[in-house]
Length: 470
Ligand code: AMP
Ligand code: ZN
Image 1 (tube, rainbow, N blue to C red):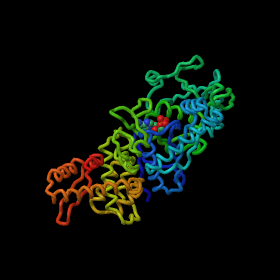
Image 2 (cartoon, rainbow, N blue to C red):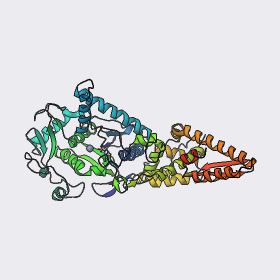
Image 3 (cartoon, helix red, strand yellow):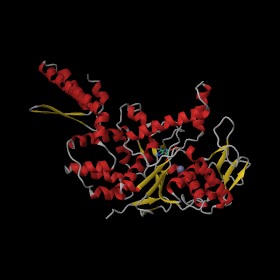
Image 4 (tube, helix red, strand yellow):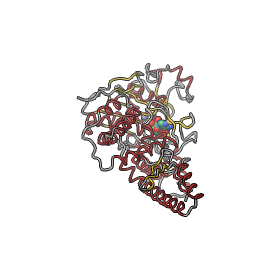
């Protein structure tokens, strides 16, 4: 018997039982990144959330029975701007070559960064530039059906022609107009109408189309790629809740007006915040995944990918969350403790039913982590290991990723403990006491036993303070 999965569907604002259209091929589309620069850690949230759902679906329906599509938006003004400035700086190649170079390098970074977080590559990662033909065909169809029109080299979607516009977010068109920054343009019939196609000037990349040389708007990309790769109706569509309006409302309008059923369930992750504000490139309040992995952030230490993943999973995906140094340190201490406990343990052949039930309840990852703590406390290491695997947390990677550092820390602590013994023997109590206080301040808990000193790292372990003791 398959466990019952429930998911919170944004479109109905309810938790619903998940019944795939075809259990032999469960299909999910998630809006992917615009590949103009490194991903920040906010961008990693949907990647981790939907990876966890992907893993759960693979577990329940079988790894060969889930198709997960996540696109790359590789048509974008910021990409063009980088390519253009490289060209002006004398880089070899055409503008198209330099654009491709920029998107290729960004996709490589994205893969390396997201791999480090323990996320599986989706079944398919289409690049928008490879589906322009399908986008043009879809726009032509929308025009033929009266849902779109051509004007001055543009093609525009006629929002008022789709009476259900706004149903996803539960808002009326008029409310949305009042709240949105809609672009008023003389060629638009209505300010709410959005761009399906826009003209390109000669210095910009472009494709031939019935409306002249130009490029697609962002929204039509996802509708066309989802249709091409997942069919007219599929199971799940996901993304951050910042995409609900206008991006997802527009995707729905385009696809439904083309006669497609589109997605049955809409899932949205809440935002990663910094001091109450969405982390975003435009606000400048961000650090990248690479910054965390390399230690180039305010915390100043290298955060292993597994720790980043664990911190994200500690908060339910529909709640806003903050990234904090304290959370990351606590997560690291927990994972190291577990890694030590499961050394040499074989994972259990079956999955802990409670873990499965908790994850299947609208992806309650925070609840699942609570259960991991219980499994550890009960000494049920085989179940702990297999549950961690289901959640994509690889303790071995933690060892190899930051293991070198762990050894370094151990060597340093052992040397300082030795020095403390020698100081005591030499009656240098000032140094011995300084070391004792220094360990405490650095979060190294030292217990003196008959056989010498034992130590362990507290959650607030601070390598910099330890370093300063040398
Ligand atoms: P973008 O490249 O800005 O289109 O974003 C790629 C993905 O990251 C989308 O699914 C966004 O919803 C998501 N995203 C962007 N910023 C954040 C954030 N601060 N927290 C969570 N998700 C985000
Ligand atoms: Zn999209």
